Image (tube, rainbow, N blue to C red; front, top):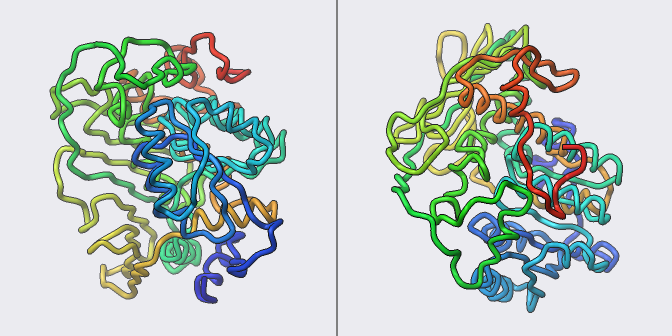
Length: 424
């Protein structure tokens, strides 16, 4: 990382300093990968392999075919022969492992993270960090109780151009910043309708379901399509929206909202998806507001950006996102004239930051509490969608007062299982 990038990290108060390419053996971080679907594979073959001083020791997946493919991919990526397991407990009990990367379906994020913290492992967990709001708070408590480094997979927290954009938002160049808009505008597939049936050979479906409620196997609730099922996923608000919502509230300098209003529905897809394809939500913090828009049935974006953020102040506004396949920002004055723009074309340094913090024991760029607060916005928006009602929220005790149905959705129903978190 050059000095310019380091300046951005320091300006944002981050702990993302580079280490020399050759480190002492004691600086080698031994990592186990849990969840080897598309995201887990991308992390291993595109992000983790570019971080020096990492030794991949394990890959873990309940699908034997995926597990074997992951072992082959690890070898091709230069990690050599790694151990494979279908049970994350075998990874966590191995004293050789320093840290784990969790890229499972959403319903496993919190259980796996809490178990890993208790086992003395540091954790990188993908977004949204939890399946429901209560789980997120338990993850924060586990990280603090066991003194673990837990990084949430909201990569913009370590992207140089985004860090610079947030620096601008906080610098008064926009005047008084009062509102931000986050959006997700992209074309998703119609998944059709599938009947229940047996799990594929080599799949440990009971472990895949884990502590969630048991339902019959269905292809439209399994690999990737679990995103659109409430028992396992959080819809595209949790899937992609967590990134944009995190950037928007980072720019605003806000934490948890006081009120959430809006609506969400399925207007386009006539298929097995339970989660909405269209949403419009407003998060009210009392002195600022955040608007979230989602349309996942077309391929045109807003402001030339498919998934992005706009930050509005009294003296100007700012766009943050990706255009022409490069991340960056655009700064406009009060009259709407473009006055500054940057596209770095660089990868984020999120995994590097995690590994650095495992060694230094500093809080990472997207500490679990940051990840929890941003993920909580997704959960609250989904609650408004599912109940059809606006909600008041008490940030002090993370509850929805005077609405028993909505308040109950801050948690979930669990079956009896070895991974069910305590205190849910």
